[in-house]
Every structure is written in C-alpha cells, then in structure tokens.
Amino acid sequence: MIYSRIAGTGSYLPEKILYNTDLEKMVATTDAWIMERTGIRQRHIVAEGEGTCDMAEHAARRAMEMANCRPEDIDLIILGTTTPDKIYPSTACLLQARLGNSGAAAFDVQAVCSGFLFAFSIADKFIRSGTVKRALVVGAETYSRILDWSDRNTCVLFGDGAGAVILEASEEAGVLSTHLHADGKYNEALCVPGTVSGGKIVNGDGFTKMHGTEVFKFAVNALSSVVDEALSANNLQDSDIDWLVPHQANIRIINATAKKLKLPMEKVIVTVPEHGNTSAASVPLALDIGVRDGRIQRGQTLLLEAIGGGFTWGAALVKY
Ligand code: UT7
Image (cartoon, rainbow, N blue to C red; front, side, top):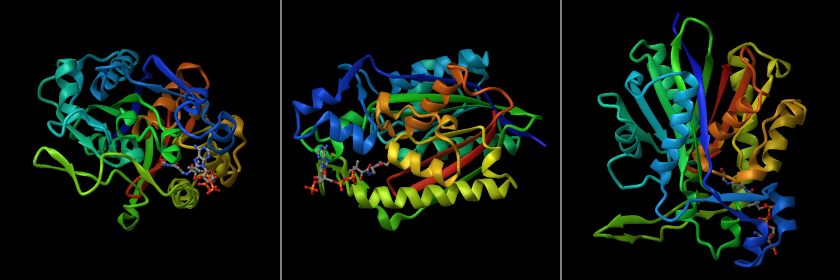
C-alpha cells in the first residue's frame, strides 16, 4: 500500500507587523475587544511589491530544504489561495517558474480558508494512486489586498502569510484520511462579491464581506462534525490525537473544537495571536511552527482542520 507522508514543512510571514494598537488609529476598535473576541494580537502585512508567489516561494524553499529535495524532484505543485497574484496564470505556475521546475503539473485550488486542506487532500490522492511521487502543497495569501481597511468587522481579523509541505510516497503510514465538504448555499456569508469584466470590477467591490456570527456558528458545528468523521473513519478516539492543528481564525472557535474533542489546550497548536487569520496559509503555518519548535514529533498523530468561505470545510488525520 502506498501512503503519502509529510517529508518537510516550511512557512513565511512578512516582516511588517500591524498591531491591534495600530488598528485603533484606523477604525473604531480596541486592543481589548480584538483580544477578547478573537485572541489576535498582531498580523503580518506584505511589503510594497511583495505578493502571494513571493511568500509561497519562501515557504516552499524551507519545506524543500527540510525534505532534502530539489525543485526537479517535484512532480506536482498545488497551491491553495484566494488572493492569486494574477487572474491567470495560476500562482502555482508562477511559483513553479521561480523554483525552476519544469513539467510538474501545477495548479491553484480555491477553497478560501480551507484551500490548503483541499490541496493537501488532492495531493494525497495523486500519491496514493501511484501517479506522482512527490508533491509540493502550499497555502499562501495576501489577504490584506482584499480587506476594506475602514471596515472594523473584517480588517482586524486577517493577515498575510504562507505555509508549505512536501508530501512524498511512502510505504509507512502518513496521511491516514482526508475529509472535504462544501455547502454553496452559504456563499454570501463570507465573500468578495466583485467580478472582473471589461477591465473593471463589476457586480460589487473587491473587499471581503462577512456575516461574522453566522460564520462563527456554522464553523463550530461543521468543525465538530468533521473531526468526528475523521476519527471514526480511522477507528480512533479523541485521546489518540497528539496534536490538533486547527485553522487559526479565532481562539474561541479553536477552544470550542478542542473542548468537543476533550483535548486540553496543551495539545492544540495555537498561533492565531501572532498572525491572525491567514486563510489558506493558516494550517500549514501552524503545522510548521509546531514542527520547528519541537512540539510535533515523528510518529505522532495530528488532526488538521479548516473552514472557509463557500462554505468549505475539511479535516485530515496524519501520522507525522
Ligand atoms: O475562516 C473563517 C473566517 N471568518 C471567521 O472565522 C469569523 C467568524 N466570526 C467571528 O470570529 C466573530 O463573529 C467576530 C470576531 C467577527 C465577531 O465576534 P462576535 O462575538 O460574534 O461579535 P458580534 O459580531 O456579535 O459583534 C458584537 C459587537 C457589535 O456591536 P453592537 O451591534 O453589539 O453594537 C459589532 O458592531 O461588536 C462590534 N464590533 C466591533 N467592536 C470593536 C464588530 N467588530 C468590532 C471591532 N471592534 N473590530
């Protein structure tokens, strides 16, 4: 039996940090409100001229270095993003050119904050089927570009960043299962409504719109149900999980999922205070931070989960 196994992880956060106290000068908000409702202390914002491919490249090179693989060893590049650098070609193709890889299949996946999990799941299936041996899976977002910096309901929540993993074919168990879902009837709950036509944005603007409470309630239920689904598909119990690596959107949603799993917070990788919601970059960023600081160890069982616009949501059970 062929499995896919995580051979390396990498991440990147832009240098510029925007603190809650900076936002206090931009919109009617307070550090105390943001901390209490979201757990976010700061977010990173791209420099002038820096974009999604730039951040993806940093994260990808770090993951490749850890996996000890060269660009030409990669057969497949999948990049989850909501903020591609261009309408086309895909940011995955831009990244491929930067890395100097030719010939691997390369494409973007659009599942908003679940984008990395969707990309990871697709790559896992390519590897399990024997079609490819080594995949680069990336989540990268310049979310700051699609925020209305005068809308306090959204601008305090998000940030920029990237995370990446190298998945390799292995006879040893790695990714145990992945579980993806969507329900498009909620497409307006979290969206950027505009359409590009005739060189302009029409049918709405290019900024994030969110019904926060609706997203919050849906997220808590959907994540509880998908983590149960992942555990029961593998005949595992809550107590078999060594680390929950959740989407880093809001500390209250993370706490609710951990509680549902009866996991103490010491078994949850929490990075949301440091970078806010980085959408598709959030899960691979948290994973890489947990790996590099030594908390996540080889042989441990990880539960990854995310939810995003669409709605889309998913989970993956992984033997690291
Ligand atoms: O990947 C998925 C992406 N999205 C999410 O994860 C977001 C999910 N939703 C949430 O995280 C929460 O709903 C929020 C953090 C966005 C909001 O927290 P809440 O506890 O649901 O607050 P609320 O929406 O019920 O708003 C409470 C009050 C409102 O004022 P009124 O109407 O009670 O007077 C808001 O206008 O807080 C106000 N408010 C703010 N106040 C200060 C909203 N944003 C802010 C702000 N600063 N930044």
